Length: 525
Image 1 (cartoon, one colour):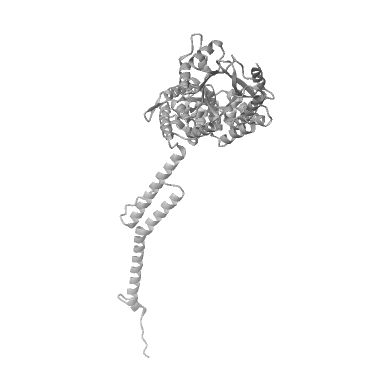
Image 2 (cartoon, one colour):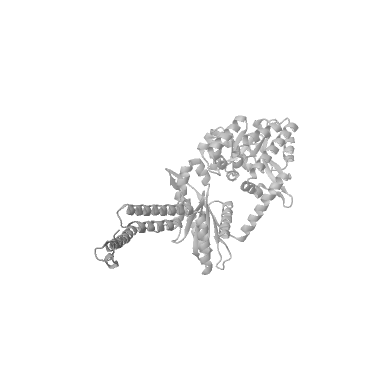
């Protein structure tokens, strides 16, 4: 076989196979590098930017944007990503706003207020200044809300929020804490007088009638004020609590006012808390007693019945009047078991009088019914049980409610009172004219008795009855209701009442509220 001899130089000669192959390989490599760079520039790098943006989004950076100038598919993808990030940012900002603001009024909520009070305290302590918190509670808002509807109530709250914020300086904070409670944070305050002036402006603004859905709605506000000390030593929780205690003090002292927190208020709050625990024990330990005040026929002078009034024989403080513990019972919910005890005890006592004095078969007893009792699902069963166990006819029992109680949750109250009336129990409106009077409610509800409040009866003198007494008794007569004058203390009050058609009265002129023996003696007379 012949031998082929090829020199190395010939292999690398221009145009040789190896030279062409190498050049082709180099060219291919250069093309590949260029292609890779082109691919990196057009695909890999944009994908890397997307990955970076996704990582930034994942850790919560919603401000990062790609903002690609491309018009191809990757550009569209980048634009879509930016749009998604913007949407997430908007949604997050909306959620954050909702988490810190009241959805109805747009004011700061409790969380944001607490944060701002904490921050303001830090700044005030640093500069030896003071701040103030005002807690505002609309008086009788629930009655307006229940009687006119929740839509009207919402409009009223929005309008009230506008009036509150109009009283603020730039930099102050207005907040709604829920329901009908508002708050104000005042920073860099001078003294208590300046803060009280703000409270006065808020009160004045809120007493102007609200034009809501074509009607004028009247409300007022009870305001509590708490100031920090320039030397520090108080927390946001302390300040808010103090404002709340001052607000409750203002509400107890009368509607439409404001009170500045003082340290005895905290002491009184602790005492009320302790008294609430003692009251719970009093129900268990039989420390409660009933006193009875007779109702008298103003023509014959005969005893027609009596009103049951609860007292507390406190082991350390002696005999306490209802004003000392009934408000605490209402705050703690103990008013319900307390009310049931009064109902059962009064029915039992009246049954005993019926047996002891058969010559007075029509003797009746009046028992006060609280708002919580009226709303309680066991009301009808409790009344029926008390009557059944005592053996009394339903007509011997009169349940007294106030106008405010009647108008709370009106539909439920109407249903409960109607069913009680159908069972034979009588219904009386106590202290008529002192609450949120409504002739529509008098016509709609099953009422038997109107009790004229003592404050109106006090206006009767030798010249005759006041116009208010005359109007109330005349209204009762036209509606064919029995009118009962409360708080009769002078004999000259009796004749004008009789002349107006008022047939029943009670008061110190006849007898003070006392133990059952007081009624025994009058029935024996």
